[in-house]
Length: 379
Image (cartoon, rainbow, N blue to C red):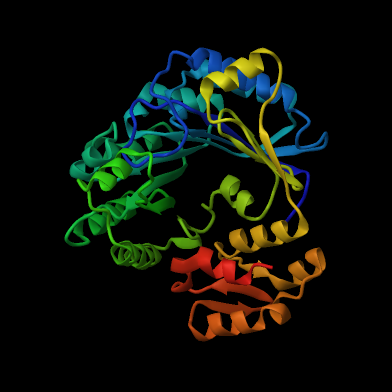
């Protein structure tokens, strides 16, 4: 892991217009507590001002959710003013997650004036049938126009979210989504396979037998189609689920994968200080009531050497930079190549992994099995 005074802050805004049928993130469609939530997020930022250390320099801020673009410019400004008041900011990237239907010209101008320089747009698909099935609030037309409106507002850095694995008899819908995404050329694409979580609408439908999830083979085929098409378009798969053109990689998320500490603020937000992890309760009322009393509530987990090494393997193998065996030996006093020689040799022979310049990295084939491969190397 890379420990330095450089840090990031993630702010979780737990509100959405409506519930997507696949989503199991923490959010509420009831926005009655929105004003109070903003006040308490500001309060938590004040109380946590020393979490990352007195010398911490905040390089990235990421507003996620939920749907943070539901906040007004005044509410976003409150949070940003609090950040300026209590933290040392040298911002390289200020991101906000948005939905296409929120990106009105007025909203975009307001975001620009507040200092946001990167938009992460939750498109998911350019197909109305798919969007309706997922219960998204926007249309395919709004998806197509989202980047155009943002560029007109003089934004230059974008990421769009796409989801593959929509159950179908062939891959035509997914191929068309990729084609349109490439034509829009956002510079960065985050893409995730459809996962059926138990407490979601899709999970309940699957349990009742009214919905048949896609097969693992179908999802794997779409993953490989994505790799092929985006590579041809000049995108680099710098992390399993993230593709960027050179110079357009996400700084904030990349810092997660290389072990840079960060503070997470808001209900359900996670934090990492290099020695421990902690997360806030996934309960809006409990979060607000605690902070109204001036107290923080969270669950903390101390990270021992073995856990830290295993986490490094899990995250670094997801990236193009791979796992540095020299770093592992120096940091953790573990000779991974010697200790896991049989496992590494087998992974190389099977075409899942390569080793070059003391770096272990996954092949394209291996990226389909990243977590299980990392598990084989755990100490």
